[in-house]
Image (cartoon, rainbow, N blue to C red):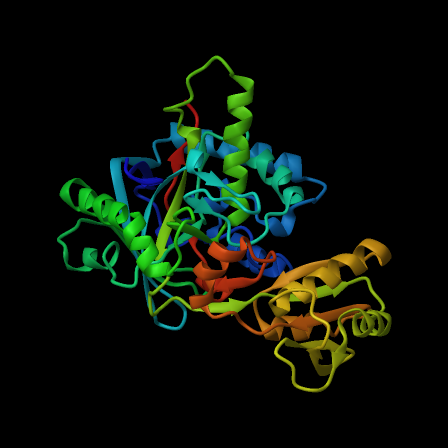
Length: 418
């Protein structure tokens, strides 16, 4: 393979109701269990990716271990029941119509975890765009450890302003392998099989995109390692895959792991320059705190004012919304200054923080007692690659690519055990 992204042996369900099979990424609707309860109702007894994932709304639940054991059992059963058809050495060209009617194109393949490093300041070919929280990996590792299959909600961005990699697939004659509506306002999705010459063209286009000459022309920087793949969604999912692979290598120091399936992780690459791709802010809801004390300390630490400032946000509590400018920023971007304060405050006084994609949800949750909502401005997507190249990873949960319903749904799977 020429770059970190390559074809894979991809599993797709057959003779299955695909609208019940595909469910949204497990890290969505973490504060809205009613979404997952409705998904459970829709799926019923049908085969579904819901049976192969652990929605993060249930992380830390008393029955977490039992849920994980059942997931592994379900994977074994689906394999033995012959639910999957395997497509060898291929990509899947994805055409996703989101809840707003926009069509986002992508390619599903696998990422070489030897070429990925999520640590801050990494110069690997595949890099995290936001800080990876080590504490978030172990519970996800419990799901992956011992699992025969993986299902991806990872989306990785490429900086391809000339549209050389993904977009040409729209004009090629490719076999359609799935085409259906997604549940719960998820829009529509179509997948086409990419093999042979079409797959070779993608590989060649990615190799050219990742050449030093092309990279320097796009980024206007020299003498720095090439950044070809930047994480969009699923950063902690890919970090978990990396941690599991490193764990396996440590457990088998004398074994050649070059071709072990766990060396790779399924992911979808998407062009940053897709007109259907928009960055949205990820907001904060802090629970278990005294809103007035939180405001007083925040005002003191980062200099809140009601005047206009380059860094600003809205604070919501007690049914009221307050616009606040930051006069003493501690980061180059608003979310960095806000997150540093939240982390410090919670470490000293307690409370919990959740990361929310919709303003309306923030306002609803902030009406609860002892709760503060933070509504943040969005970061332009044209700032992503230059910021990661020059400054390294952004603060965690800096941006989101679209509404929660528009996140990746689980459709494809891949074997990760021998």
